[in-house]
Image (tube, rainbow, N blue to C red; front, side, top):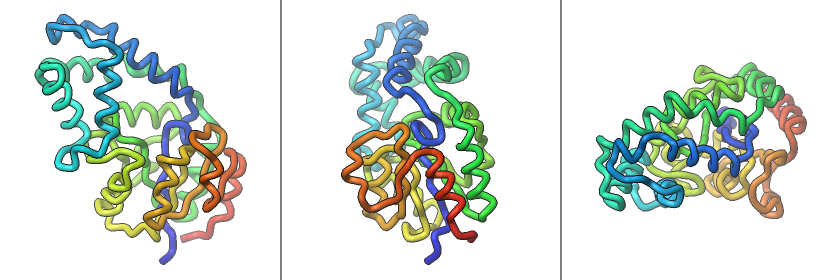
Length: 238
């Protein structure tokens, strides 16, 4: 079967960023909001990290990541969803753009996306689904992209699993009626992105912002942004 669909990771792939600085500022800004007044207690940075780590564990296949996120806060910290959810909504609407300073736009990204689209490939934005849709849309814009570039994108409301759980990829395939043999995964994380190879994906590993042990990536193409562009130019039309 011809490969006609490309899954692109976002953070560290389509959007170069300093992940450690991004996460640190994310938690700092969120804590500066008036959380205590809204929920009657403060939340430490450690507690916020625990909540996000929970979404990354494959322990809630019966719920979306969004529901698991707020359910965990309610059960662990006794904070009702109706109190804490408006705090996060305000954060994403009014403050999330402050994190843009930890990212930069890579000009070749827009060229690469245009090349594969012109060749007829359908594109999936396969970013780890720990954020709501508004945060994913904003990060796409920071990268110089928009929603129309993709036929599907993962967010925490439409996903039950997170990378590197294979259920994350399988759910996308099922939602789109695709088989893994039709798909290529492009990402910068050896463990989270290249695990798709075990389902039957092909892959390209971007090395500019590499995460993980590259020695485990012997089964796929790899290289920097310029190499990725040349790879895209060499793909057959579909």
